[in-house]
Length: 326
Image (cartoon, rainbow, N blue to C red; front, side, top):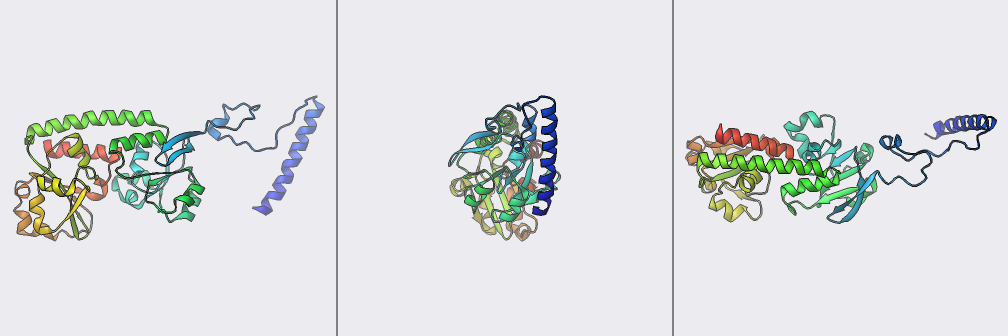
């Protein structure tokens, strides 16, 4: 770089001197500025050459959990370190780095094909990606170092509900109107679907969301992804009492295979991670669950059903409509 800089600088000085000479010959009293422009390419067309004030239109102030922070008004290179890739993608903002869970989502393959998988410890890789905004959960590591690379905004999971979270990310990305339009439309669609489903299966029919991950089985409450927000918050479908007692507060509850029938609703959403131990599904205990015997178990790929961003929520809603009403 240093070797290249010297001849380039000399050449630039010669060009400036020549231009200055021509200006003097023509009677001009002004000469081009040798200072590089700090205006972004998208702003330079509307900027006046005589403007000497620093360009402030390129940033907005976002009121984060930890106080106000200046962020790009039109971010072009966003890194998401946890959970929110789908929220950003739904608003049409470019990602250059995402968390590994988002990268594994088969429904995100097309959009994230050339996007790097990064963690909060990949500082060198993050620097190379030249982000103009970093988003993550409040428990990520190296926050102070990340802030030195780019404006970094973190959220505490569950501090606000899942739809308010989308509105917050809309504000952060300067796309609040688009975020609100989707939220308003989604609530109407989900409520209508809920009424149709209850009319078919009965208002008292219960639904469980059960997941097999590695060698463990979990049941979920109403705010832990996997479609739980739609089923229980928007559609207001009934939850088995046993699930209410154990999973509603924390969001999830670990089960042994022997007690799965106690947590099974009249309908089951069965979320499966590839490679998980599913041997319990071959037992008589599982096969005798009424929902299993009555063909009321709807299986999903956990890797694409995991999140609660707008892209995933739309997919989940369509799945529930087809499964319950199809």
